[in-house]
Image 1 (spheres, helix red, strand yellow):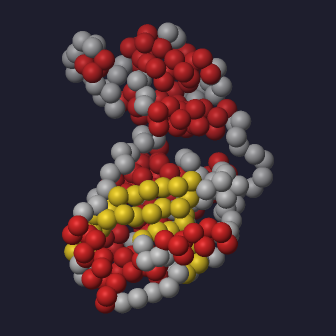
Image 2: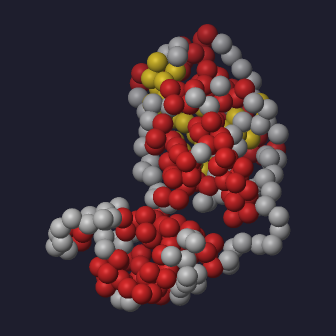
Length: 279
């Protein structure tokens, strides 16, 4: 049975073209990417040991081995952080004994006050599971047509994978789907992420499971929305992490071009809203 650590190493290895590391093309292969033997050589470990890690038969490689694998795979800073995280999950170092459960939906009053200061901007409070915990009227203005806010406890990840409207509303649906699944690895806790993935997988199906097991951090690009009234909106996103005790983040959407800024202003003139905290 595989492990998060083994799955990530194998997924990253499969995504690398040997020529990018200056290795010769050895002809047609049954599987894509970097050969296990080549990675083992670059990391200074045996092929047999690397096989045990990838197959989940060795769940506790040393920090030196983890760092050697990170160097051998030429991981960037985000990927290195993820490698260390899945190594902890695999070894059981950060998994407690309590029963998996959803995280708290409480948003501190000072965070709600910060949202108020951002009015009439487009901003919301979320966690890595995708729960929409509070938002500005600007966010409601932009997202109202999507259907995301129709449920009592909106969740962006669930919406992306289970609501057919999401594939139209998000111009780059594949990018958003990759972002939401990768964020689960950074969830409020290993237990809550495990709980949420188990809840969502039967509804979202193979599309969700395949992306979750891929482990590769997606690039951060502008968010493009196909709004039915004002057409395409393009946003830059600033994500501000709140204290770990909150396990939440404040996300601010900023117009990526003048057309988006003008379209949003037209929406504001057509309707108005107030700050709404969702508990």
